[in-house]
Image (tube, rainbow over all chains, first blue to last red; front, side, top):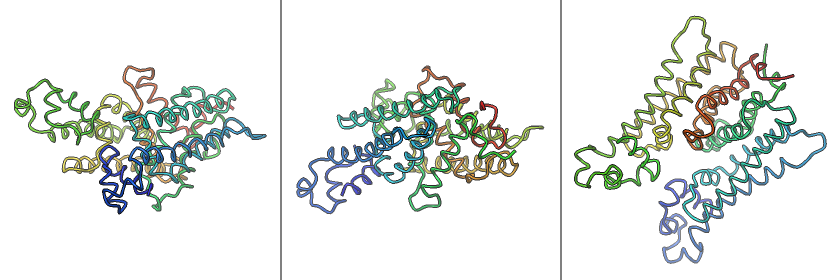
Length: 191
Length: 191
């Protein structure tokens, strides 16, 4: 039920979707829909939590101290796992990226997004301080641009299409890190 | 007049903006607006052309054969100039990136956008064939991801803010190309 509601929100916009539209889509009568769905806001909240919980787990997982792992390893892992979350939860993440703060639920989601951005930027800073990441691009800008590249895939990635999640992760981490990692850029280079 | 119409379209959506809204915004009465603006579509068309003409000039300029310039130089220049167009025409480009093909004007704009994507992907392929760009990421994917990173700036770049256009161009070309350029990655690297 949540799947179909998310698709509908993405197709015609959350604000442009009425409970009547939802009822039709879900096969309920207009009077029966409220027995199944407490409110449109409730569905939006569940959808945004799906995306935000996935990305929070990524940062929890990537931030965990692992013996022998560097800040660079943690950052690279965070990017790789983020791509996987975007691909696995593409409709929910698409909805999240369109949120503009038009309601309490949206404002709360934007707050969680900002927290995630800050945690990600902290990972970038740690890798810079460790000396494994170039320091000539400000960490906040690095994290915006990396997520710009990662998030863009919701615009054009088609599940089951020519490019799978593994190729996407490889492409993004390769482009991003062979540019960012000091002294690591040689792996993909031919002389 | 076009400026304020574009801002209004970006704030409340093109479909969500009426001629009455435009009249209020532009300081005309509802009956006078049609003497000044033939139609809402006309303004949309002008706005999308502004963005598309800018990007077309970039590709014309970058594609020009210059003695001594390689395909890699042309591609790097195309990325750098595209960032400048996005910054200079941010409201018009923002509108362009939201176009979904809901009308004849939008379909025509999407067609022009696809042509530009194809020309850009051709520049990527030439650089791969020349041997100056890594060949392990498919050119079509490279061009989508690069433009994902470039286009993301319409979401967060604030004119007159902490980051200026030059820093943005530098950051994007550095991240992108020190990862993409075979044998060129060493400039930003410390051992």
